[in-house]
Image 1 (cartoon, rainbow, N blue to C red):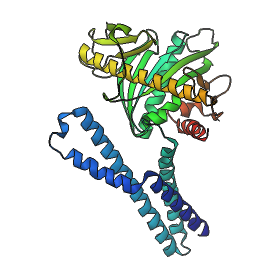
Image 2 (image 1 turned 90 degrees about the horizontal axis):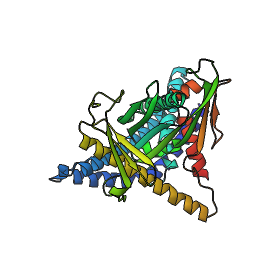
Image 3 (image 1 turned 90 degrees about the vertical axis):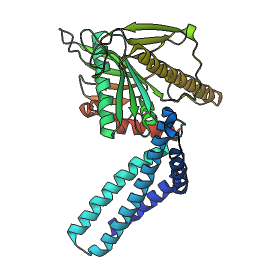
Image 4 (image 1 turned 135 degrees about the vertical axis):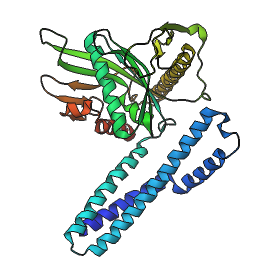
Length: 363
């Protein structure tokens, strides 16, 4: 019982720190302000702004409810603990509830790892195979599935913008919007080159192959954010959508691919019903990618001027997934590793992601 009392006190202390971090009074004031804004006539006349405001309102309310719920559960556990005496069944019930409360606290404590302006918002995730033909295309498809499963596990929405299948297997590219609290902050840990080592299923000789795929992550930015894109810098192609991009993938030449010539960044969309809509979405993706590229360049310049090493150079190899001759996933930035490759490829990425975010914060 003494251990459970100490655990309850520890969790109450951690909750108090979280309440101070999120500033509950400020959350309440913000919720009231947003609620008043949403009740004004003509609020939905600007759908994009309205969605942003209502989304923020839902997140603020959810945060307040969760903190209040955790406080009540800890209070109830403390009372039950005092009433339990030496009842083994009640003590076990309190222990299990404290374990659940601790899990919820740990989820919320992750928010303290984020400080970026866009960390709390949604993300645009783009996956491209590297050189290596069908093996790399297959690896890119495996990564796409891994992030889809990760999003499902976290309760995030994942919407397909573009998904182009390879001729033989795998994918040539894929772009998704990932919607959820801290989606961009979490996925920012994934940008870079991912390396796979395995016996190739496409090699008749059964030889070991190394494949690469790149993951790019950009924040979803509103129209208010200015990103300069000149028409003369764009190469626009239309093509026929193909592959399992979703039930609304168009089979006419309405898919749009936009290449930004100065940077080589490519943005595509095939999931809307018209070429005009696909171009709009592709431009939105391109603006987000260019915005993130400029933001990263500024961070690296600031780090260089202050004598620090940039946290993650563009295009650097961040993680290896080895399936043969042994099984291991290793993050080269943190040395975090696990032999359970199958679980990682099934979307259990949180340990690797959190290790990187903690190392970034510590630095």
